[in-house]
Image (cartoon, rainbow, N blue to C red; front, side):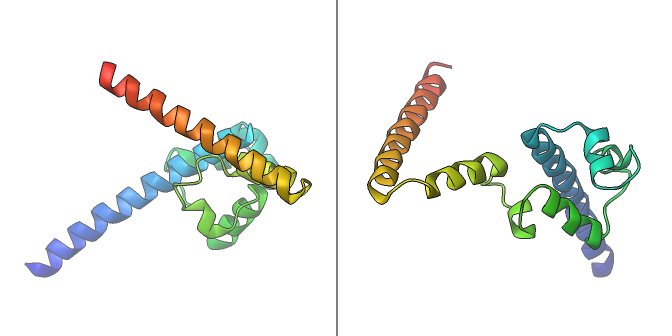
Length: 130
């Protein structure tokens, strides 16, 4: 029956979303250099709270999710942006750039562009040789 097919598709999507959420919490926690217990306690929860999220045992409430985002210094939409692999590092770099004059910022931008291009070339060379 069509309703059963939709339910199965929805369940598969929900399962995927939960897995992505768990993985993102772990990725962001590691990026911040925190262990599960330390992060749990600093958020004002039991010592197993983050472990329980990362293992899939629980999901945070919306209020706890917003608190988690605040702790990680992220906007909620940034939490779900996979392009932001290391948001805390990116924010640190942006804060440092704000202290530089426009000309120096342009110099830094050119350096980053060159480094990025070099990294891409290295990755592509590795793929061709691997």
